[in-house]
Length: 611
Image 1 (cartoon, rainbow, N blue to C red):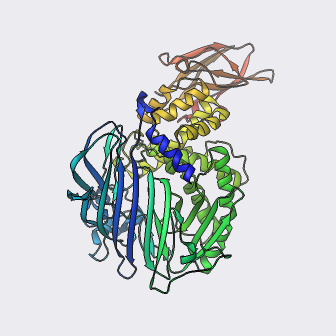
Image 2 (cartoon, rainbow, N blue to C red):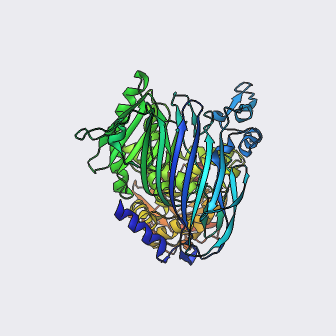
C-alpha cells in the first residue's frame, strides 16, 4: 500500500502529457475523520480534518463541499425533480394510481423531521482560523480567509453532524432487506476542481465525481453492529466480527461501543454499512486479494450469498486479466442500499433470495472498481464512460462465467437503444446525468448506448484491438480522471485509425446508422447511406455458383482499415451518399453486416436476394 501511495503522489506532482494537450494535474485530499454514531436515532457527530493540496495552476479563493444527505428533505432539488420528471425512479416514489395510469407521489416530500437526512457543518477553520461559509441545499460554499496558491496545502478542520434518512435511494436506514445502516455519501465531501473548474453539482439523482486521496476514519458504534466498507481495518483484534486473526489474542473492550479504525489509500470516497445481524465471510483469492461478504444472517439470503463468493473470485480474475490488476488488499460485497451501487473498495447489493437475483449485479458493480474507482471519469458529465464501459466488460464476464458462453461481444443488448431511437427519446450522451429529459433516456443511453461505444469499436477496429484498448486505457489513466478524448486517443493509437468522427457522431449527436443495398445489376452493387452517421461496411456477397466473398469498405475518414480476412476495397467518403463497386461473378445475394454487430436501426434494407 505504501508503494501504491508513493506512485499516486508521483502521478499528482509530476507534469505529464494528458487530456486537451495541456499539462495534466489533479487535486489531492487527506481526510481524517472521527465519527460517533447513535443507532437509536440514526444521528451522528463527526470531526473532520482535511488536508487539501492545490496541484492546479490556479489561485483558489473559494472551496465547495457536498452535503449529499440534505437532498433527502421535502422541497429539495431532488424532491422537486422527482415531482417533475415523467418517469421517476420507482424506488423513490409511491404510485397512488394504477400501472396503466400512474399517479406518482415523492417519498421525500412525505418525510418527517426524524426521517429526513441532513448534514450540518457546525464549525470550519482554515489553518486554525474560523471561516465564513453558507449552506445552499446540498452544497457548502466556503470563502477562504487567504487564497490558496498553486502547489500550496491547506488544513481544514470541521465539526459536523448528520442524520441518516429513511432509505429512499442508495443510502438510508432499514432498507427493504432490513439492513440497518447503508452509509453512502454520508460526510461533508470536498468537491472536485479540475481543468474545467469546480464541479459543485447539487445532488439531484445520480452520479458522482471525487478527489483522489487518503482516508483515515474511526467509527464509534454499538458493539453488536458489524461494519463493512471502504478501507482496511487497522485494529481487527480489538473488533472481531470476522476480521480478527484467529491465531492472535483478542483485546476487545467491554464498552457499549467499539471503535472501528479504517485506512484507505488512493481512493476518492469512503462508504460503509452496518447491521447487528450480518454474517461476515472472508475469501482469500488465488491472487491474494481478500474478498469480504457481509449479508443478513437469515435462511432466505444465506444460500445465494454463499454461492456468489467463488463466482466473485472468477470475476476478479477475469477483470485482472482483461483490464488490469486490482490494486488494493481487499474488496467487500455488502448487502445494503437498493439494487446495486459501486463505491471505493466495496459495493452495496440489495436482495439475494436467489443467485440469479444478485449475480449479474455483483459482476456489474465489481467491474465499476476499474471503470469508476480507478479510472475515475467525471460520472456526472460522462456517465456513459463508467456505466457503458462497465456494462460492456461485465456483460462479457457474465456471459463467459455465469452462462458458459464464448465471452465475445454481441448485439444482444441493442434493443433498448433501438427503442429509444424509434420513439424519439434518444439524447446526446454529452447531456449531464441529471438533465436527461427522462430516466429511460439516461439509463439506456449511459448503460446500453455507452457499452455500444465499445461494441461499435469492435466492428470498426476489430475485437483484438478493443482488448488492447482496454488494457492500455487502464495503464495510461489509472488513478486519474480520463475524459472521452483520452479514451478515443488510446483507441486511435492502438488501431492506428482516426476516430474523432466516431466520438462525435456516437456521443455528441443523436445521428443514427442506416445503410441499404440500393441496387444490384449483374455484377454491380450500389449501397446507400440512409442514416446520418457514417460507418465502414462489412458485407458478404454470395454468387450464383454457390461461392461467397466477404468485403470490407473502409470509411475514408478513418485513414485505414481494421485487421480483416475480407477483401478490402476502395474507401467510401462521408459526403457521397452512395457507393458502387463491381464483383467478379453473377450475384445471388448481398448482406450488409452479416454478423449484425453494426447498430443499424433498419435491417430490412440490409439484404438483397435474387428472385
